[in-house]
Each structure stands twice: as structure tokens, then as C-alpha cells.
Image 1 (cartoon, rainbow, N blue to C red):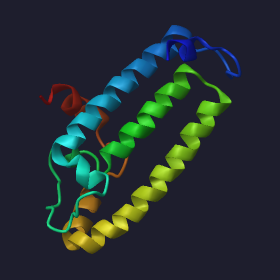
Image 2 (cartoon, one colour):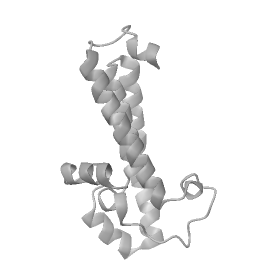
Image 3 (tube, helix red, strand yellow):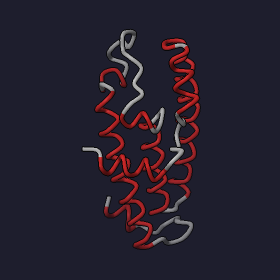
Image 4 (cartoon, rainbow, N blue to C red):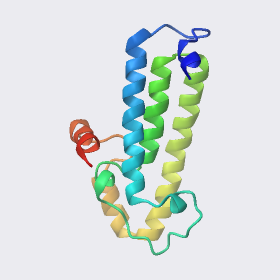
Length: 146
């Protein structure tokens, strides 16, 4: 990883220490969001190894701020990587992953509406999909929540 961060070949421009700081900040934020998300969702359910028919709709914790915090964390991590190393490869990785996440979230939303009905429709109307309505409140929650 250290070699990858030092590599300057095929970069659009050099972001230097600022780019590395932004990457580190977004990587830590993403890691924290991953941890907070998996406190509410079992990894076996997330990976599809366990059925989710009897699982209640989770609307508290990190899910109070975002409907898809794991997707948010993935995009934030890759955005940070692109900022640190603004190469064509990282731009393609970020773009393809972002499109995949947006399409996947939309398809997952259809399944969640079928599973939870009006409860999910109400939750969806109150909670943003990928970007928090109040970024400062979201950051405070992510940083301060034990």
C-alpha cells in the first residue's frame, strides 16, 4: 500500500500530503461506518448466508442517518483513494463501483419494500439513501458513538 501511495505514474496530478490526509480521514470514517453498520446487521445476513424473513426493519443507530451506510462507506473509501492517487485506474474503479452501488441499492430497495411494505416506504421517505441530510450530525454520531 505504501508503494502504491508513492507511485506517481499515470496520475492526473499530485495531491501530496493533503491527498494522503484526505484518504486517511475517509478510510477511518469508512471503517467506523462499517463497524457501526455491522452492529445492527449480522454479517451472515449481509452476505446472504442466512434468511432475512423474520428480521425486523432496522431504523436506529447509523441507519437513522442513512438507509445504506455500507454502500456509503465503500464509496467514501474509494473516493478517498482517488483523491490520494488521482489516476485513471482509480477513477474507473470509483465510477464503476459507484454505479454498481447505486443500481444495487435501488434493486435492494424494491426487495425491502416487498419485505417490509409501508414501514419501509415511510422509512425511505424520512431517511436519505447514501448522503446524510445533516453531515455534521452524521459525523458527530460516527465519531462519538461507542
